[in-house]
Image (tube, rainbow over all chains, first blue to last red; front, side, top):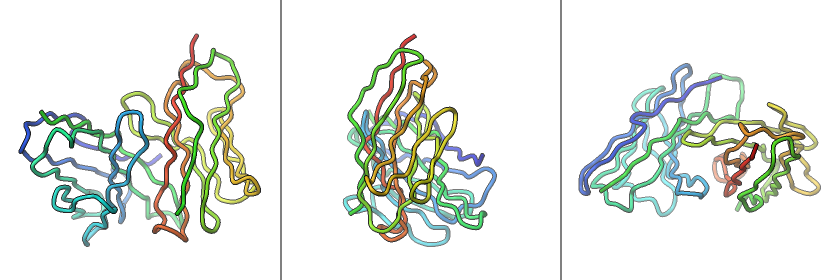
Length: 118
Length: 114
């Protein structure tokens, strides 16, 4: 099946610093990628939809200036958590929709990135 | 708006027991329905899906049938193994609402004891 990778898998940073998380579709092109946040023992919360070559669409309540998303190519989207604070500590998961099939509504998920802000 | 409701967890079973995880949904139009599984420390993996009423999705011994009359998509497995211990998420995607995004239930943690 399709593979989506994330890097790094874990990151620990100091409060006030910025952290960039990469999401790559390894064997398919993805016009659309999604960024989720998952709290312990909770469901996934969609943060934003990342569209290649255009601005991301953020969900209500998600700070655009705090969570910067860039989708510069058909295989790469990045999420930058700016001026991170302890409350930003979470598990961030990306997913990509395979646009190569005639029609698919299957999203492939990355393994996630555990962010800890001290 | 669209929503998915799953049974509360955690669910604890002995090996070879029968598993049912209930999932009901509310949606505009005719959504596609999914079950995803998340093993400890990993991302989500698609387990099975169904795209129209009465479809049955199946994979790795798990099954779920798209029941439009009861708006349900319950996950079942006849004989669970320790390796099935994970969190299971029911989800829907509707093209008629919310831009075709995946809407997840809250997840149900399954723990299978030997």
